[in-house]
Structures are given as C-alpha cells and as structure tokens.
Image: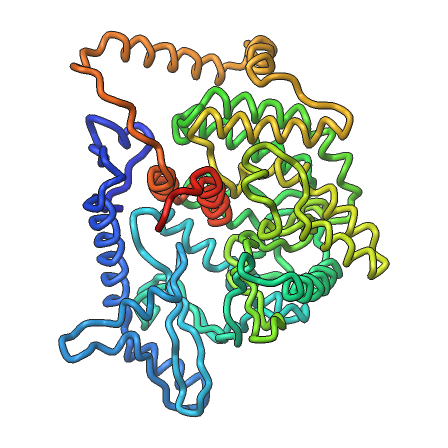
Length: 495
C-alpha cells in the first residue's frame, strides 16, 4: 500500500522490494493511512460527478439529486470522512440524495495496490450485480440495482460503479446485542435461510450475467483465479470442485505465491484431498445453494427494534453444497476457540439449531450442529493463511478433530507431519518445496548478518499488516476472524 506497487511472489522480497521493518511504529501507520487516503482521493477525483448526478436523475424521471460527499468545499476538498464511513475493502458507497427524500447509493469500485488485477475485479463486480438482480425474485431483502457500468470508454462516469437502493437500518453489531435481541435476529435469519433453500442450482460456482438465464459461471472470488482473466469453475459435481480448488492451492504454494509455512500448508491440502470421499458422503445430491461470503454480522441491516431490513455486501457470493451453505454464519462462531482448535459450538449456534427444530426442520438443525466439518475443511478458501506455526497447528488439529468424530482425537501434529512427509514423498511439488526450503536454510546459515537482534514482538498490528499486504488472496471474513482471534490472545492491547 505505502509504496503503491504490485509485486509477484519472487519480487516481493529483498533485494527487489524493501518492506517496512517496523510495522509497530506510529510513523508506519501514519504513512499507511496516508497512502490509503491518497488512493481513495485519486479514485474519487476520477468520478465524473456531473454525469453521475445526471444519470441518477434521469433514472428517476428527472427528479433532481445531489451527491454531497463529492461536492468540493470552499477549499476544493471532498468529504473523505463521509465516504470512509461507508467504505469496505473493495468498494466505497456514496449517498445520492434526491429532492423527494429518496436516497440511493453509488457503489464505486476502489483502486489501490491491495486489490486484484482489473479483469479479476470486473468479473467479481459483474457477479455481484447479477447476484443482486437474482435476489430480487427470491424475497430476500437485498438492495435493488438500478444501473451499473464497468470500466470502459463508454462509461460516462469514468469509474466502475452501480447505483443501488440504500436500504433502511444500520449494520448489526452482534457483539453488543442482548440475548433477547439476538434471538429476534436469529429467528428472522432462519426465515431468510429457509427462503434461500427454496432455490437450488445444479452447478457450483458464482452467478454471472450472459445471454442465457440462471447462469452459473466460475467462482467470483479472487483467491480462486488462475490468472487475471481465468477463474475456477463452474463445476457440475462437488468432487470436481474440491479437487480443482485443492490442486489450485497446491500450485500457489509450489510457485511461491503462498509462502508462509509452505510445507505445512501443502501437506494439509494433501490431507484434505485424501478426505474428499468423506466430504462427499455429507453431500446428498441436493444441489447447490447461494451463500453469502462474508457473514460476520455487519452484512445484516437492522432497525431500532432489531427487525432485519436488509442483507447487503453480496460480493464474492457463491453456490455451495447444502452442508456448507446452511451451516452457521461465522458471526456466531466462538472465534477464539475456533482458532485455538476447539470445535465446540457457541450458545448462539445451539440456539440457532433449536430455532430450526421448532420449525420442524431437524435437517437444517443438523447442518448447524455439524457444520464445523465443512467450515474447517473449506476455511482456507476465504479464510486466511496462517503465518505462525502455533496458529497453523491449532487450526489443522481442529480440522482433523472435526473429522475424527466425538470419540477420537488426532495424535500430535509433528508425528502426523513426519508420517505425511513419508506418505507423500513421491509428490514432485512437495519435493521442490523441500529442496527450496533446504536451500534457503543453507543460505541463511552462511549469511553474515552482524550482531544478533532481539526477535521483534509479534502483535495484532503485525498480523493486520501481513493480512493487508496479501489482501487480494484473503477474504474479508478471514481478515475479521484473524483479527478477532488475535484480540482474544492479546486482551491487554488497547486501541
């Protein structure tokens, strides 16, 4: 972000790139936020506001409108604070205010070094548009799309954008709600999932516009792109989908794009591939269902009485097997326990299952109560890559335990790793990883590094920096889960 440059895996390190060595300092974070604001302002100044206002007014039969945040003040400054309050990792949402009191949102794609290449962004953008349009016919409370345009010479606004309905309500802050409020939200969320269950698909992937109808195309998730223009999918079977994803992850590790704990992560994906038959046993050919990618809580809008008014941020949504689509949303998970390897359900997850049982849907309750298997199995796809050995081992042991059953616990990780290295010793990619690791270890041994220095304390800020610097590879849910887990380990950190 700070150097405003893109680097491949090979050139992201010395001597090609000189990353900051002190991500603890106020100076680093001042520079980081300054660079972030600079990229945001550059994008906002690219917006042809007059054209956007004219278009919005025309779409409402000539009713006048304004976009206050894009109107320069007396010194020519835009209202960056107003934009930042409604900004996510991929988009900023700016109020379009009509004179009759109606408010729309101009959802504008951001442009900064942490985002995927433009062709990838365009694909994800169009998938979100088509997903929202699909939801209009399902009864799910999602924003209506009034207009959209990609980045092209024919786009009069100058940037990729969509004009969408601004739904009433405020983002749900799950951690600050009372038990009564939580129950009310969960009752309504159960209704929404039951409505989504009525719409199944024959393929897995993401929704995408084309000449046909009800189109399922490749996954609109940046971590599943093979190249800027090519993503995985669609797949007619869960098996083909899982094997393709796992092979893709192993390629990313083998070519150095995912370099943290490379051998450990590679072996974990070989284990996952061995477990594919077990995963398929949970899939009863019921089809695939639309799943929100980032269900950490603030995707739900509620009014003052905690009535759900909308479900927003459908970017990266995909069609998943029933066991994954209707497992508990991550906002209900006991995050600290999850990252520590525990598979216990939170009280809210148990209550969510009980709500389905009261509706006579024991099958849906079963999916909630037994969701850890799929949640852990697929966490790498939209979660995050562990950078610390302790974190990785806890998560992987939790995965093994989830599939071992109630009366069995996995053995020590290091014992498993030694056995796995022997089991997969004929794997060519693994062999290259081991050779690369050996070469680097020898190089490090022969380097004259001068006097030794104390190991830098690894804090939440270090962790956040690592995630941000690999932002295009990790999903938003993974970022929030990682930060929440780090907070649970560092309760003395004050912000």
